[in-house]
Each structure stands twice: as C-alpha cells, then as structure tokens.
Length: 221
Image 1 (cartoon, rainbow, N blue to C red):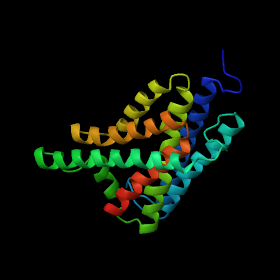
Image 2 (image 1 turned 90 degrees about the horizontal axis):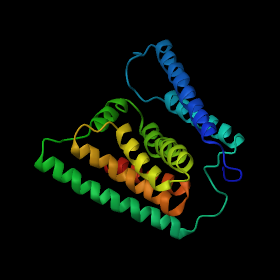
Image 3 (image 1 turned 45 degrees about the vertical axis):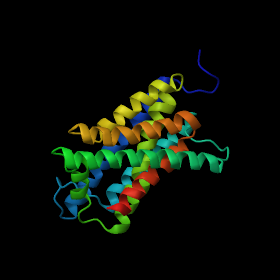
C-alpha cells in the first residue's frame, strides 16, 4: 500500500522520462544553434546556450514533478550541524580520492580519467565564468536531482540503503571509468553523497556537498 501523498513509482519514471526527452530536444536545439552560428556541429564544446538549455530541462522537470506531488526538497530549515556533517563527509571523500589519485599516478599507468580529459576539451574555449557556472553550479544541481533525487530518494524510498548502492554505482558508471583508479575516484564521492542523503534525508545537503567537491576541484586545477 502506498504511503499517504507519495507518488506512484510509474509517475516518477514517466516524469524522469520527460526530463530525458527535454534534454534530448534541447541538445538538438543547441547543435542547430551551433550550426547556424558557423560552429562545427560534432564538437563537444560547452557554450552558454548548451548549459542554460540543460538547466532549463531540469527546471521544467522540477515544475512537472511538483505538479505530480514528487517532493525533492523540504521547507524545514537545515541546521548548521547538517551542513557541517555534509562538508566533513565530502572532505573525507576528497582526501581518500586524493590518496588514490596519488597512488594511481605513481604506481600504475594511470595519468588522468577519461572523463577529465573529455571535460578539458569541452571547456577549452569556455570563459572562466561559464566554466564555473557549469562545473560548480549546474552540474552538481542536475546530477544530484538525477542520482540522489529521482533514483535514491524517490524510486528507492522504501529501501534507501539499496538506492544508496545503486545510485553510487550508476553515478560512477555515468562518469565512464576506464580503469580501477578512475572507478574508485568516482565511486567514492558517489558513496559519500549517498551516505549524506541516507543519514540526513535532505537532498539540499547532497547538492551542497557536490558543490563543495566541484568547487575545490575547480580552484585546484
């Protein structure tokens, strides 16, 4: 029996399907934009219109989700202890990842993740402001709603521990690891973010922690 005011699983799935559809349509629109601007259509490059369209797809989806009574966020105020907990968990994860990165670079053939190399190419001609907006603001917001929101918080709401495992693995897979080092480098933050949601039940805190992770990575590089 469904909990009171909880959306059905199929409702969650079709709303997420709308997000995927909007993302595809807006991606095509971005490519068409580039073609008419005289840019190479097949170039993987971050632009203002591509990022804003990506954000628009998620914002429209959130409005639809709200209409369907899918609640990702709470109006209850988050205490400073919640933010502190999220920050500490994320900083520990960053520390562990840094050790793994160091060991990988010094004791294996690993040099950098495939995802990082693709991002470097994509952001090659992007301004500092656009890079910051995309990496530190938009990416954490969108990714957390997908992996910890739709997947863990909603689809696995009755088995949050299982959602923690599944979301961590899919988060890792989405970043296309190509060796054991890159696998661990993406799995560890996925586990940390899932753990924050599991403990606090607040998606806002996983978004904050993801912001923190990407901000540190952004200024470090």
